[in-house]
Length: 261
Image 1: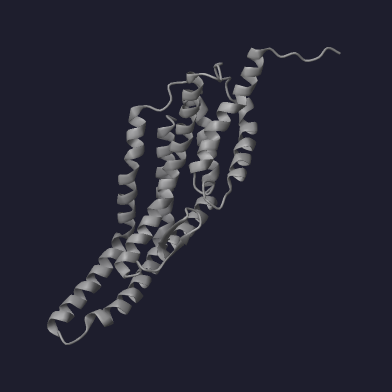
Image 2 (image 1 turned 60 degrees about the horizontal axis):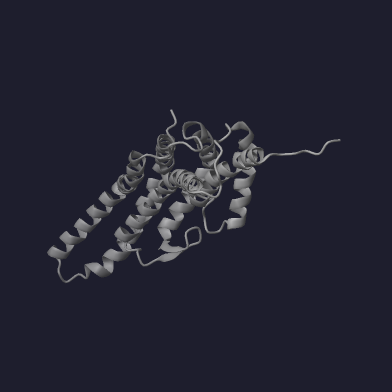
């Protein structure tokens, strides 16, 4: 039996068949929701990226050969990393819409001081933001958001092939504009609660003008807190349809970033 002999070109082609998809998928898992959380260790992310790469690489077209010790290889690595990070960032912004909404409601209710550590990001956020983040994370998994992300990144190898032009300047402008989308979507979500709390504060203002001897600040804080929690509880009925809309918008934005039809 003759031994298997591989040339340098064949070995380079075999390595590239798995290396470049692994870099793009690994970058996605570093920035995507749930996968990119601090509670998920880097070892688990690498293993997940490796498993997904082994599954999808045989179905992908062969990348053009390149010298792995060259400037072209470095630019290709940078291109693959940017593609994966941009898709993960788009879905990360979608979840942080509700984190920002919790911050706005907490500041309006007077709960801005009630903060706790967010284990997924390693920062301190308000209790309401953590509640909304947990709720949106559960809905994200229920709607198979993790599978949608993997499907988009796998489809991107057709629209953005390895060794191609990569992301354009217009794509980076779209990524930068996601900040305005996050703030506007969070404000739309909390606007009913803001309006109700504004009416309550106006009523306390009228009370303070009509009866200055009453300490409105002592009475107003617990009442504002109680009504704020009540309005937030009522607004939970609209949480699911609004999250579905945000999730669909994030999936559409991800497809646009990856130039998918």
